[in-house]
Length: 499
Image (cartoon, rainbow, N blue to C red; front, side):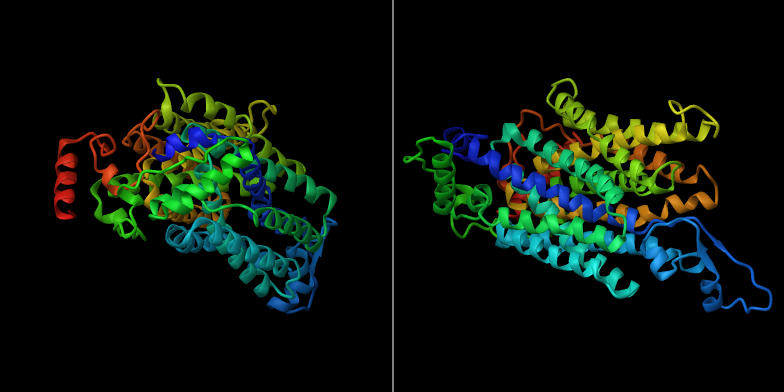
């Protein structure tokens, strides 16, 4: 039997898979706290600079005259990151996302080569270690480096964690598990806002936010390797053992479970250790990857740009952070509804939500400052965050379906790498308000609208078969990218050259 038939015997989403997926999904709460840490620990309180006659205006003298009028403890108050030093707060946020980028480059292909489980556990362990380095950093330089290293691990395990939630269950549950992962991340943002309200000294907050990672690491130790990855690597017997174990824990009898020994299931098959280079060489993968990379970049830029700007809006910074997390939650039921409808599907839903996010950001430019709470810049920014959250969630699910199993993590890694470029730029976009108040929203508007239009070039994957190997991807069922005969001709030429 093939893998999908095997999952029907084992149970596509049985009790054991529910527990395993729950651990992976809840880990997103910890990862969200690490992603949003700089929003609160890097908050700039109200301050004034006392003017003193006869005192030189050098850097050291200037810092000595800074008086903070708001009683909060952040890295800004501890290391006087104001005026000429204020850029260091955004720099620390960008270093985290730079770490995410490198993590995606390294961990994605690595998990395709050596397995999902060892990469996930190793990355989570070191993220917790470096998270404590952040909390006890003796200087800004150590803090900044630790954020880079935390981002490195966070980026790697985020991908692997998402892929495992997909590969532990039957394909019919991929949309649900992917959506639960994104929902948990949104809940984590809201919980981090609440945690910051009750634990305000920044070192205590960083320690508390990081400590949950210890629990999730201990819960993750018992997780098995992905049976889909084992099968794609030719380790058919090990895949059968994992599936039988799942069946046993689900209360199903699967003693006669036997997987097909064909294609990628043959040891020594040339799909083993699939290179990222295939994303460039293979004509179908090349065009899909180019479009998906821009879509992920735009999603990240708008998503994190709006979220990281939460502390700059009026009102309590803790309430704002929580709101920017909670506003995502309605997006996910909408995702589940639309992406499973034949008249919407993955492609149209993702493109529509991106265009709506861009349109919401466009409307902020025409709203006067002194308006009511229902129609204000903040409410429209929250609406944009809701829409881009929906698009981001669909992008994860959609991308995992567009890549075959043998190169799925590498494909997600490259797309997520592009996504992190958007994340690196995101902390600096809100500061463009100094040039013009509407400039940040102009950037978000153009990014969302252009990505939505490009997303329409991709093929629909709803109710379609999932490719396990590159050979399956080259079949007419999977090779549609731009619906062009020229592409299909190029695909046939690629197959003839790689026989």
